[in-house]
Structures are given as structure tokens and as C-alpha cells.
Amino acid sequence: MTWTQVVIQLRARERGCHLITSEVVHHLNLNSLRVGLVHLFLQHTSAALTLNENCDVDVRRDMEMHLNTLVPEDAPYTHTMEGKDDMPAHIKSSLLGVSLTIPIRQGKLALGTWQGIWLCEARNHGGRRTILATIQGE
Amino acid sequence: MTWTQVVIQLRARERGCHLITSEVVHHLNLNSLRVGLVHLFLQHTSAALTLNENCDVDVRRDMEMHLNTLVPEDAPYTHTMEGKDDMPAHIKSSLLGVSLTIPIRQGKLALGTWQGIWLCEARNHGGRRTILATIQGE
Amino acid sequence: MTWTQVVIQLRARERGCHLITSEVVHHLNLNSLRVGLVHLFLQHTSAALTLNENCDVDVRRDMEMHLNTLVPEDAPYTHTMEGKDDMPAHIKSSLLGVSLTIPIRQGKLALGTWQGIWLCEARNHGGRRTILATIQGE
Image (cartoon, rainbow over all chains, first blue to last red; front, side):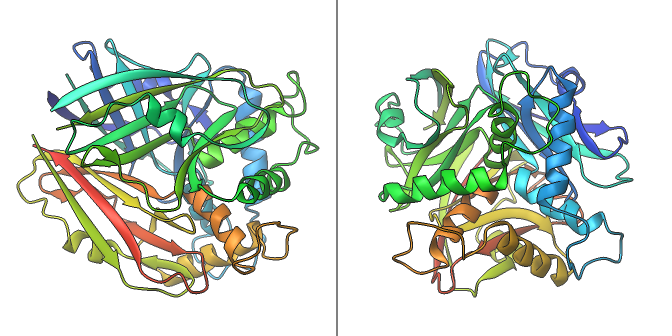
């Protein structure tokens, strides 16, 4: 049984949903683990991590469009000091969540055929984002 | 400390929310674990796992109804090649999530009195679904 | 590698979003753990746990307001025996989720600067709530 922790710094991305599977996997050393779990923890409150389709970019665009419909900028929010995109970003972050737990099987993430890791950037200018990855297994 | 991994094949179910607690528990051997965690990971992007009420089927029907209100089929999606139910299914999957972590206590899942495991099938014809269960504990 | 489990009884709170980070941390003894994970599991189906902004109470008020917009009480629910707030509470619980996994780093929760633990009480009179915390690490 081993534990490791890795800080993954993601470059700034524009608002919307982004496929980051390969960037995340690049930072994880899973080869020696027969079975285990990877926990990815985004240390922010205005972006989110989710698992979804890894192939068609239209899925990511449609998701961003519908998130904006579900959580519009023009609702009567009180928390508006940091811009109209700020409070909606907090709500989207909680709806999607900021952490993922993914099983490890035979040295690899056991993702389904169509599953990829998405960063959903909900701010117009969110800047760099940090994921703390915790890996346990044997 | 032990790790085990089990593949759980769920039979095809109709669109909607389904209580699958007993079917899932049937595949887990938790008797020998005093404390631990079960991680359930649905390897799909158009269905979801969630915890909710385990008694009244109306709760599951109302959930399905309201998910269809939150994520309607007639929104202006671009990703429509696989049918009108496809893009909404992807969105519902991310809103609810595809993985659950449930504590083990004295050889059993430590669910609350009213908590059950739900599969939310978001496609009209989703087919069989696969859960990879990872169990750790001592 | 050690495992511990702690039952955290939260006092009854009014409907809305509440910052409970310090109350939760008070019950966890993480000092001796260099690396690990804390799993918080709310054993209920009409409230939720989420991570969000830990500073401005307006964020919590705006979240409660928008959750009520997303899941209104006057929709045509069938499950209404326990009051108009009951079925919306079940839906909010699944949208936000009832469990959190938070990394431990050098004896502390590795939360981001602005991240706090929220209890989202979705019932008008939800009463006391129970969290089962499972801590593992080394």
C-alpha cells in the first residue's frame, strides 16, 4: 500500500469545458499499482471537475451553453462585486463538484471508453487552476 | 488493509431513476471489514449514480420529471447525431455524477435510514451499464 | 496506514447554506497524518454537502436563492405528503451530493484558500443531521 500526492498546475483556460485527461495522466505515475484510487481535488470555488464525453467537442460546447441557461448571469444575485460571471461560477462549481475519484486497474485509470476528465472553467478570466492529486493503491 | 475490485454488470433499464441498492450489495463482500470505503464508478457518460430516497417510487418519478425540466430535449444543442435524448443525458450525467463513495462500518454499507443507491438512466435505450466497484478497508 | 471513523452530529439549522468547516474539523484528528483522505458522508436525502466560498455570506444566500429557482416548490410533484419543501429537497440533495472527499496534507485538510465545507439544509425543519467521517492516511 502506497500513498503519493502530486500538485498539478493547469494553465489558464478560457471559460467553457475543456478535456484535460492527458494533461492530468501525464502527472500521475500509476504503472506499479495493480489496484487503487486516484483522487483529484480542484482547490477552487469558481470552476469544476467532471467526467464526460471524450471525443466530440460539441458536447463540451453544448454543456457550457446549457450551464449558462441553468445559471444565468442576469439573476438578482447580491454577490456581484467581482463581476457578473462570479456568482454563477460559484453555483456551477457546486452543481458539478470539484473532486473526482477514479479507480486504478492494472496500472491505468479505469475510465470507460467514452469517459474523459473535464475542467469546467466558469470564470471569464479564471487564471491558472490547481489540482491536488492523491493516489493510493497497491 | 485489503483492496478488492469487482465489475458489476447492470441489466438494461428504461429511462428514469432506479433503486439498485440490493443488486449492488449482492456483488460486494464486506463482512470481514470493520471500517472502509466502497467506491462505485459507472463507466458511462449518459447515465448517473446518486444516493436518494429508498422507499417511495414517486420520488424517483418526480426526480426523472424534474431532470427533464432542468435539461429539456428541445434546447438548441449541436450534438444531436445520436438522438434528442443524447445531449441531455450527458448533461444529467455531469449534474448528478457517475461515482459514489460510501463508508463501510462493521461489515456493512453505512447508509442512512432512507438512503438508497440509484441508477439514473438518461438514455431512451441505454443498454447494459457497468459499475467498477473498488473496496478498501480493514 | 490508519483508519478511523467519527460520527459528527450537527445541530438543527434553518433552511439554507451554512459554513461548517470549523465544526467539522473540530471532530477530526489529523495531526499525525502526512498524507491521506477525509471522507464526509451525510446520511440524509433532503440536505447536501458541498465545497464553496468560505468568506462572504452573500454567496451562501445567493446559492440558496438560485437552488430555489432551479428546483421550485410549485412544480407538479407527486411526492408531496411531507410538505411542499420535501421533493425539492430530495432533488437538491442529488444535484449537490451528500459526500465529500478532501485530501489531507501535512496534518491538515488541503482546502484551497477560498474553500469551505457547506451544509445545504433543504428542508424547512430538517432537524439534526449526521455526518459519518472516515479518515485514512499515513
